[in-house]
Amino acid sequence: MTRAKVDTQRDERAKRESEIVIAAERAAREAKTARLRALRLSAQTADRPAPASPGTAPHKSPSSD
Image 1 (cartoon, rainbow, N blue to C red):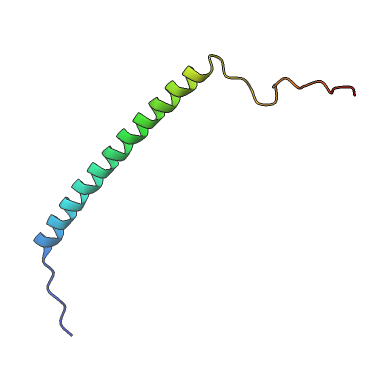
Image 2 (tube, rainbow, N blue to C red):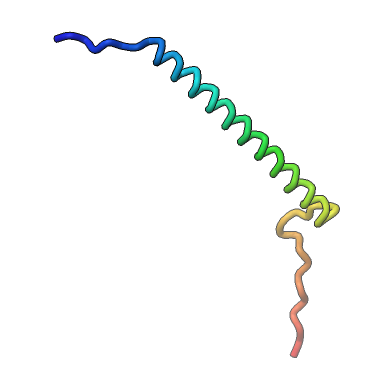
């Protein structure tokens, strides 16, 4: 049985191109994540000056009828 010819230059070129694309996608994803994180943090600080811990909300006293 004969082995199929392997075009090593083509394989190496494809690997380089795929690494470039993967790196570009990763950079875009990280930039988007950083931008969204900054927006979320700025929205949180604008909405409430001091974050309240959950479970410490004031309770309404029951009305006596």
